[in-house]
Amino acid sequence: MQANAKISELQNILQDTLDLAKKLGATSAEASISNVEGISVGTRMKEVETVEFTNDGGLGICVFKGNHKGNASTADLSSSALKRTVEKAIQIAKYTSEDKCNGLAEKEVIATDIPDLDLYHPQELDTEKAIKIALEAETAGYDSDDLIVNSDGANYNANLGIKAYANTHGINAGYAKSRYSLSCVLIAKNETDMQRDYAYTISREADKLKAPAEVGLEAAKNTVSRLDANKIETQKSPILFHKDIASGLFGHFISAISGGSLYRKSSFLLDSKGKQVFPDWLSIVERPHLLRGLASAPFDNEGVRTVDMDIVSDGCVQDYLLTSYSARKLGLMTNGHAGGTHNCIVSDTGHSDDALLKEMGTGLLVTELMGQGVSIVNGDYSRGAAGFWVENGEIQYPVHEITIAGNLKEMYRQIVAVGKEREIRGSLQTGGVLIEQMSIAGA
Image (tube, rainbow, N blue to C red):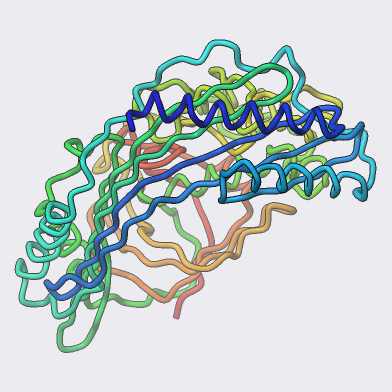
């Protein structure tokens, strides 16, 4: 079935579901439905290990009886199953506590114009082709260096999906999207050390992925470069977060200014709107309508239209990120963030990756982070790390078994530079981030 025909079919199901909810006594209701077809192939040691096909989907409905709320879901889209699901949601709403902040998003912010963001680039889910791609990536990496002695495998994934949403304010819309990815994880060993590392590529378009051999060779290079890692002494030092992991720093910021953290008063950035958090040259913008963007969306999970936003300007927080519920708890209006952010882009200082190393001079380039030692409540940051020691702007040797620590408030203020070569394989795009000083716990 063509995507447009499938979207229409799902929209009809949504409308029937909402009509039934109203008939059974719901004051208002919203429903969403998804359908995903995909293939996943895994290889290991140059042999096919797994081949999986998926054809998943389901409907979720949320009904409101005044300020009482009930949720139910089903993977069975038959008329009888949908009827039972709506009845269960209505029944649940009778027993939930009343909450004046419950309800649909306000009608005036609901999306009415649904732009085509070019997110759907279908390709036949060809098993033989998928196997060939995964094997080519793993083989290229495995055979590239005698120090590569084992493999955690290569994985190729292709997913074709449809998302549709409707509520009793009148929206009933859907769109199709595709996503393709290839990854490879290898293990290297010499006389004294064993290390693992990886590489991956992801795109809305299958032909825009990196070549399989390129992914395998990158994984091998990354892995071999980590051999003979040293420990370093406990000290304070400049820290350069590699662009592959630097988005996590700003991800903590996004969590701290999200409505859920704020109304629960579990954020280190309470009352930060209008206040300076970053250096005055740094900005963060959100661009939800980037064509083929990995995090692009015409509306959020509540049907609220997504719009361009300046989240940080001149280092100052411009707005919080809100759902309809969290906005009401804070006395504000939702701004389209049910389900997360959509293509957040961090400004840069014009430094290339090499220039960031030169700017740091002597310090630690962090390429891997481990553990969950980050508190959004108070901003304390402590994580296991690995990377490379740098002197005079040149990488000297790999480093492992260390912990880096600081406080996010101080870390944000001490950002010295952000690289112009952005990591774009996620919802938050940034280059490498150089921080003036952090504590390193080592040998």
